[in-house]
Image (cartoon, rainbow, N blue to C red):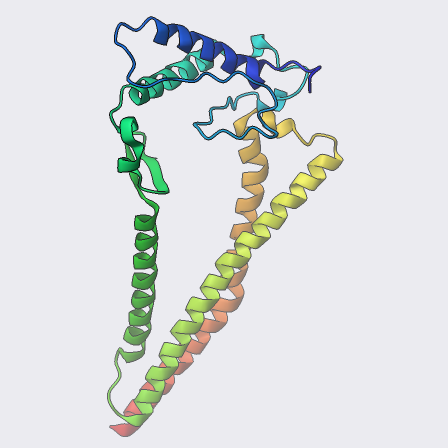
Length: 262
């Protein structure tokens, strides 16, 4: 891509690095740690450097094309990128933790922002523990619901015990069917989105949705949501109607047996 305009990849980052270099050089406080500024090409091939990845997402369809020119990059975006990088870099070069990073080594970390208010971070093994706790709690809750639905209104007679078992089995069956419907709706939604993408490609407009965020939401989001609603509507009108009839039949049988025992 040597003959293409490369404003966003990567003339912008080079200019930001030069401005940050100027800002650090003019600091009145000496830096506690050194900084290496790496200007190079072919970084996407063999040179994999860990770090913070910043990218411009607006007008992304111009990326790696002849239209990727400086006038199409917003000055505000460049300023925001420079401000963020400079703030992070100042914090790192002045931090005491980098003097001996082994003392602050926690392995892989999980981190995310909470509604843009604060940053939450914890070791990856803590995240694994949290996932297992929620998984076990879910299994226990669902098992308790099965036992609860199978024991409501039942006594210790043999006939009613059979009814209780039938009710519990029906609840378990409904739960499994609900999970299957959710997974099926997701799969059908994915296939629908792929079908729409294929049709758009055949029309020669494969990248038109990239011009605006709402175009992607309207085109693919509406298709996926419609398919999910269709699957759940069909499930409600077909399966759950039969399930409700079975439930009433079981309940009536329980009442008849209870009346006969009385």
